[in-house]
Amino acid sequence: MGANASLQDCIQDCLRCYQACQSSAAGMCLEEGGAHVAPEHMRLMLSCAEVCRTAAAVMLNQSPQHPAVCRACAELCTACAGSCAAVGGMDECVQACRACAESCRQMAA
Amino acid sequence: MGANASLQDCIQDCLRCYQACQSSAAGMCLEEGGAHVAPEHMRLMLSCAEVCRTAAAVMLNQSPQHPAVCRACAELCTACAGSCAAVGGMDECVQACRACAESCRQMAA
Amino acid sequence: MGANASLQDCIQDCLRCYQACQSSAAGMCLEEGGAHVAPEHMRLMLSCAEVCRTAAAVMLNQSPQHPAVCRACAELCTACAGSCAAVGGMDECVQACRACAESCRQMAA
Amino acid sequence: MGANASLQDCIQDCLRCYQACQSSAAGMCLEEGGAHVAPEHMRLMLSCAEVCRTAAAVMLNQSPQHPAVCRACAELCTACAGSCAAVGGMDECVQACRACAESCRQMAA
Image (cartoon, rainbow over all chains, first blue to last red):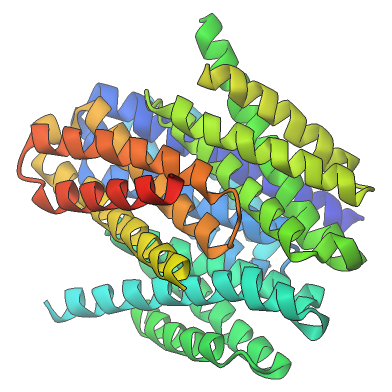
């Protein structure tokens, strides 16, 4: 039950981070241009969104292998939070990435 | 160039394994029933397909973080190859999972 | 603003339906067996989940082409609601599919 | 058998178009900048990739509802081919989108 509660929380954190990264990359970043569309930054945003969505899927599938995917997700979210903080003006993504990274790190432990 | 060649190979191995697992899970496994639809087996098949597809996406995105995802992919493919071998009659999946696991392991190194 | 509000609502309906279908297919259906794992039913559940997730993605991307995807999504959700109602004991999926179908139909109009 | 052959062809056309659009959007477009990262163009590239991948998934799942998804895919591929042709220097994407649009149109008929 405790485990189920935290699994549910992690799924929600992953889907929230997916939405923040996907909508910011395709929305605000493309509109702002400049550092927001630097290749490294955009690739990380898009890849972070992709991996968050997949971590959620593997947990929704109740796969015992989800820790491996959560570990990868935590790594991308941490990198993405750093990139968003460096670019600036992306507080929603920074918060969502940090929350998801922390949640996935616990799930991977 | 060598690096690019092996990245391309790994993307193809991931997409081949994605197709083998997705089409076998939704095709042959559902038709055969029995051990083929055991929850643990089906969840692993579906999750392996999902992660293979995402590993390919992150490599297509040229993300420097792809090794983290390839590491997770290798772990799921290895588990899926074992499950498919135990169930039996799933040689195409076993081969595709083993090839993808080996390819992703090298990419993650 | 009204348009944005309904776009946001539709994204949430799609992600809710995605979660309901994916977790029920890989969870309850595989555990129950019988009619719950009939090939036609499971294929529709998995495909409905996939298309819901993609409709959400295309709306998060702010693509002007989202009505085409919402139209397909409404069609699969309607079929999936019918299949879930026929199988029985799947009220959460039936509700989520109907809400998503209605939401996507309006978005496609 | 003829039907199966063309379904297989359409899956391959979708996965080829997915790869062309995803790798060009995250690769060449971000490196070139200018018209290549215009919001409308990038959103269409990313959405086209997403829908192609999902059309392939629904066909791999053997879902009888695949024509609805192929119809949406043909629409996005046609729009994406037009956008890529207008931007210029994107012949691989133009070809892949046109081939996938034609293949999906036949599958949707």
